[in-house]
Length: 446
Image (cartoon, rainbow, N blue to C red; front, side, top):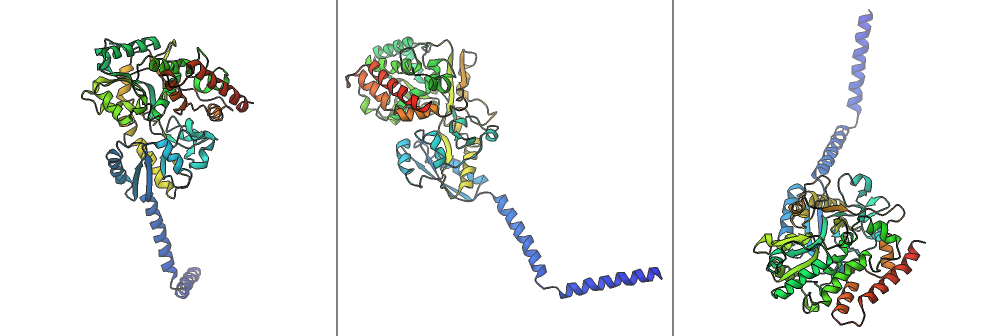
């Protein structure tokens, strides 16, 4: 009897479920299917990755219509739903700063060096936590604010002097000069030979003059100088200090007639070809310029690189960021913009092949251009970051004093004075700069 009762009860339960199913709304099944379909569609959309259209603004007018278009084609193999447009600016700093007065300054762009570090967040999207991103990239500190990274370097460059080895050899200079005196003597020997401009300043374009500031670490012989010592001294432009000794080389070369005859008529693009063809002996430029000039040279081996001449006991070629890539805070396609940045840095080959530097990706192989220094006393080192609480001090002092460490103005003033267009001495200029530094430093560090 118990078994029969259990069977009856089970049959009754089956009947109840059947009746409930029959009475339920007919669209329940459809709703369930819709939910499944929506989940599946959302999953597929996530798997597809970013989509949309982005504008990438670059300074590389020389390869924007060739190499960059090839990059876009390769990028689209991974991200087919993102359309990448390029805009190249010949005067990048000047033109992009004008555009940044509005919200229309592309989606991905090089963060202008003239934007104060503290103002970065007003214009750019944070890319992530600095500590976490540092596991993946080096050189993020230059554009980090409050523990957030805002830019990834397009390359990590080393700085020094680009030169035509054949021009030096023909002037009897068979080994790279090591000290300022040796360097000036080498330039004089090239001038005496009479077939090439010894040192080309690129005065007219202006921005190449800022490349001199990048070798300050070499002149100082210390990776601590730029971010540790400099903001803590009132003697930044006095005799014997790195800034004074660095720009004295520029002044002396111009004073002795070892630069281009008429600096106001220089041309950056033409200068690369002229160096490649032996019409220029040397230019103070970052390693990013090596490949650009070698590509124009009949013999690539003629184009070489040396540390900036120094009297320091250690020869350090400082590693520093090239331009850093950031995302416009107003971009409507930030996910696509970030995908482009990560792909460009990791997959395109640009850092070593086009920028001529090291890849900022942690663990990446060293470029060929560094191998010539293996076994020598030349050291390649990153600058020591600022001390806690002193982040951005150099930038703040510089901006307040309107010195323009990374601007061309006072470099032009030095050249103008050296060639006799201004009635002032080198020491006059250095004193003015140091006085301005002292006044502004007192405001910043109080």
